[in-house]
Length: 351
Image 1 (cartoon, rainbow, N blue to C red):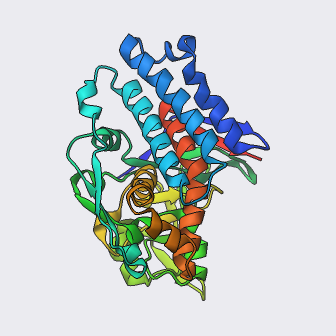
Image 2: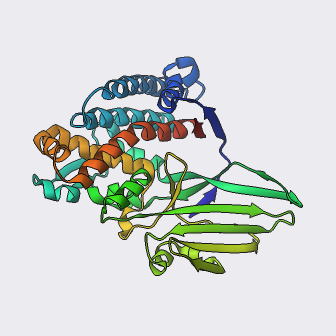
């Protein structure tokens, strides 16, 4: 299901996106600011301390190696997750947050089997409460409104995709989770990473003066058209479909409403991707992908440190490159996604 959003877009111009994200997050460490969002004293103190701890953890993590960094980043994520939980559900019992809500254990000691490692979901704990609040992806779309003749204006617009399949699942595989990170898409293609779950796309709508709408959706050829139709139901609703050597071009002109794909995710550079995994069970939200992946890497770093060191210093270029890129990406993107959730807003950080 897809929702059109009315939440505000908050544009911030900055030469240091990571620093600006934390500048806004750390507003929640001030009681006067947090008091505007939640009145419960226990919840307020939890939010303030969680953000303070997360800020310190993330700051320290920038100076340590990839072998150790997942441990700090995971616990920083956990602090941010708890802050969101207490903001959205201030009367929640602390007893419900005593455990991670996730478990490792399905991890082979053989480097060649590392991508098949699994993370297991529990019914209770921090992740159980967090995932209830974070089941949707919010993406920016290009929306042009024509007022008459050639006069038109570009109107900032957001769409929200419901990705709640996670709530009924019990385990995820490392390779499947990596395939859902849009920032890894080009690197995955270049390194011939065999798992695919995303197709790069461009989506735009034009609102005509008489109220009719033109929709344009182009999709990179990561998959065949028949598979895309089975995975992205809206494709069959487009009346015109053409293809060239690199993409499918779908158009719907002068319709009463825009045709919008059910599941989309946005990269940190603003590129859009259709979420169309070959395994239906991995259609989950971006923020939860980051949380589960970092937990798994944290688990290996804590309990199988020699294995992670061997992997990151090994000759399997695919694994090394994807994991390092994910860690670097997640260090900035996860706090940004939390910031959006805390403020019920979409922050657009522009250089």
